[in-house]
Length: 391
Ligand SMILES: C[S@@+](CC[C@H](N)C(=O)[O-])C[C@H]1O[C@@H](n2cnc3c(N)ncnc32)[C@H](O)[C@@H]1O
Image 1 (tube, rainbow, N blue to C red):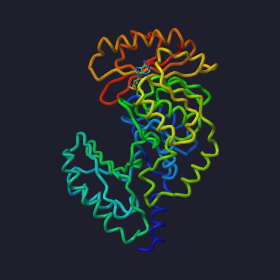
Image 2: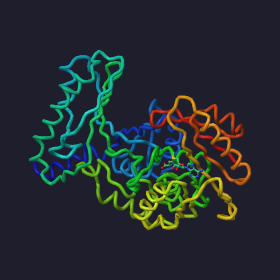
Image 3: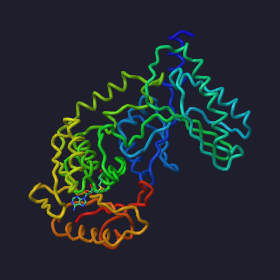
Image 4: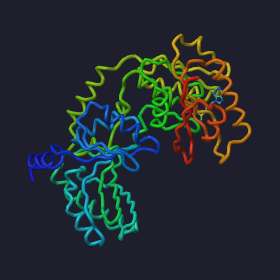
């Protein structure tokens, strides 16, 4: 097959058609993602809340932009086939019929992830063992047909999901999880994921015009996410994605969307990020030094309890705290005492500021800050809660 006829097939079968996508979200963030998707200036249809995430339909080039623009999902999957199979020979036949070479670069050796639920083919390892050679063989033999595709080191994963004998075959478009913004190289202990930091900022009503204080900043997850929002920089602007190597990827359309976004960048700030730990402040400074838009973020070594926000900003904004809480099932006395002191400090010096405060347990939020709205989320194997409100 010539390159031109291959390109025509990719266009006819992949890029010119509406496709179905699924934004995988952490618990508690599906409705945030749904709102983000509806607000994107993209022709996206059939947005639907489903268990584990949000489904939507659009063309591939618009889904590529959604990957780089959405802050809440963990990854976005593109569905490439859907069928029924209750025997291995049917599954193998259906998988063989997929035009793998139109979706993934020739020669790719993708990984595979299988989940099954109430299906006759219930053994996920056995399914993976049958499916992987079929996919790899299809992509291996296709290399002569599409010799120009660059192979990069971004992971490619085929996701196979079966429920009641119905199979969905998808590709992970994102490759590296979307909460990795490609900015933070240094992390400290217990960093929050960027999509959770965004959800807390969002719940606190943080907008680009608001000053932000991150007084227990670690390596600066909240501070950097907030500065990106202030500067109108899409979360995926500085990183790469699995779809960038796909035959259907339009480098020109993606670069055009990014250059339009770059035309709206504005200066970040004010953001105040501080921590008592000199190692954390050094990690933060090293992260800030990598991008000029982060220059307005003020990093300092400071104790939260000595902080006087009215001396830092005449305008009241948002203060976000992710205090140290350990990994115990029940918070110990020191943690409880720390949260009581934080409550007192916020009440004394942060009047009129909106707060997003991470709690290790929902009931602690109820005890210490009865006025805060609580949303629960799951992070690092822990059921956490964020308390949101105005002091
Ligand atoms: C869970 S970590 C924060 C992680 C950070 N949100 C991130 O994502 O990288 C808690 C941080 O609070 C800092 N800390 C503890 N007590 C503090 C205080 N009184 N004032 C300022 N920072 C404090 C610790 O040094 C630690 O870096």
